Length: 207
Image 1 (tube, rainbow, N blue to C red):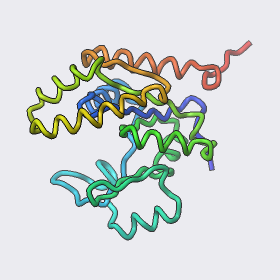
Image 2 (image 1 turned 135 degrees about the horizontal axis):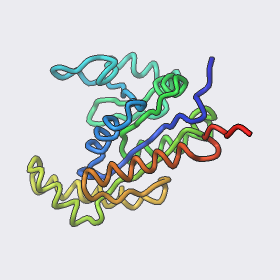
Image 3 (image 1 turned 90 degrees about the vertical axis):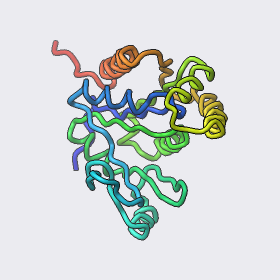
Image 4 (image 1 turned 180 degrees about the vertical axis):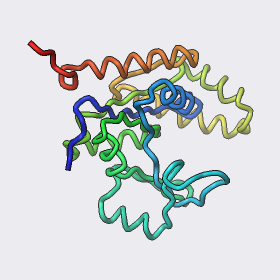
C-alpha cells in the first residue's frame, strides 16, 4: 500500500458561522485543479440533485454506527439526530494519489482531528489548519444580518457560539482575517504555496 506523497496537503479550513469558509473553499477548489474536497459521510437522506459519493456518502444509521465501532472515522458527530463523519480512507486514498485534500469543517471537528494526529503517522505530516474569521464580532453580525436567512434570536445564538469558536484561533496553524473574497483567496493560495515549499515537503534540488 502506497504512502501519501510528501508534497500532498490535507488542508482543514474552519470558521464561525457566516465567516465565509464555504465561499473560500469553492474559490480555492476552482483555483487549484490539483486539489479535491473530502467527501463527508452522513445518515441524512439525500436532497434533490445530491449524488452518493460526490456530494456525500449516504449511510443508514446501522452502517454508520458499524463503521464507528470499526474505527473507520477520523472524526464524527451527531447533530439534531443526524450523524456526519470523515473516513480515514477518504483522506488517505486521495493523498496517496498525490492530490491535495480540502476539508471544510467546524471548529469542534478540527479540534478532534488535531487530537487524533499523534495516532495518524500517515496523515499528520500533511495536515495544515486554517482559521478564517472576520476582523470583529460586529462585522460577523453585519454579515449574518445581510444574509437575511435567520431571525434575530438565531443570529444572537450564532454570535454567542462564534465568540467561543473565535477564541480557539490560536490552536490553528494559520489565522486568516477575512476581508474580500479575492483577498481571502489570495491569502489562502499563499498559504498553500508556502506549505508546498517547506523543506519537509519540497522536492530536493539536484547537485
